[in-house]
Image 1 (cartoon, rainbow, N blue to C red):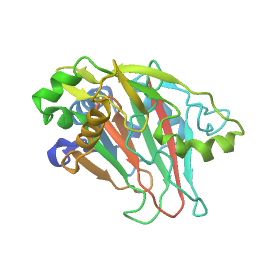
Image 2 (cartoon, one colour; image 1 turned 120 degrees about the vertical axis):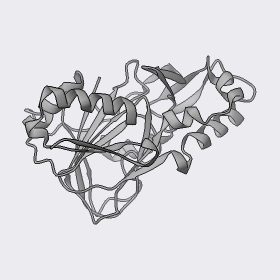
Image 3 (cartoon, rainbow, N blue to C red; image 1 turned 60 degrees about the horizontal axis):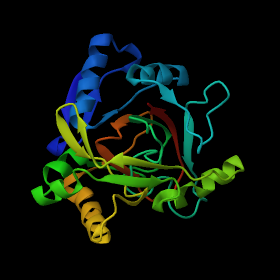
Length: 263
């Protein structure tokens, strides 16, 4: 069985299938759905790490993420995102952002596979469609940001959530910075490509930079562009970092996610 069920306003979609038995025709449908909806999730996927990697490779070259530890020497490209009941402070990724935008070639896709989850409704991941965000942007603002680039840093506002992870690795990472155009064309659609969690300025800068930044960030994450994904065990999600912002939500409990980033 293979079925695509779009969420309200097409902010993501659920796909019903068994990834273990996926065929090339269905992979093509998944890729087209990812282009259209920005985020897809698959419930009840009993995948080994080998199966998980095999599925991920259908979407591009797998990346190594230096800020989290690898699952094992055998599976270094699967990283572990874990929260314990004893953890204090924000969850990893708790602020709207797009992954690793501070690099010259940020990963196009991110995958998460849930291995251990808290009670229902806790630890959701929230997504914001930047297709809808751009579509609903006033024309005068579109013109204003059309030729602007954003400057992003790994030491930006969201970096506070990486402190505990870096402690686990026993080292402090150096700052990475990059610039990317704020308006991105994806096939025949436009999206706002700007990560509030990593943003440190506009290029070129302007007198009304603070005002413009405040307006843009508030617009990007409006509730009408959002979908909150509830997790169940053995659930997989994949999203396009170019067209979706996402954030973790704070909760108390135990959770283990296996993460893959794809160039």
